[in-house]
Length: 124
Image (cartoon, rainbow, N blue to C red):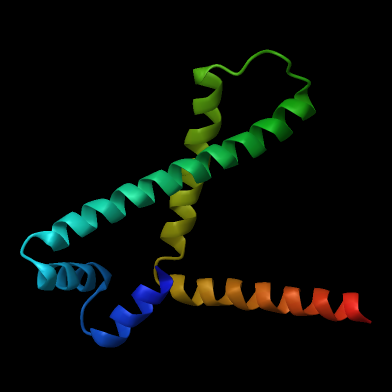
């Protein structure tokens, strides 16, 4: 997917991300750009749901171990954890909207630096 995005950005630099996807879909056949966008949205929603569930499980595990809670987690308990996590994620994404690509490259760069440092320590 990242490679496809890089190719589209190189081929159609004047279009935005949505415009690029729609343009490619429409070149295949009329209306396919909209279908592609619907498929991408469903994929993003599915991934975000898994990310939120993972965040809930992490925070709930830490929270319940610190409080000693042994009762089963009901729907209200889950929502009390998931909604603030979701709102925090949206807020952080909003703060980074102007320079998301720069932040992503920094994260990848730091991961590479960390991996190289780990590798050099393990070989010496």
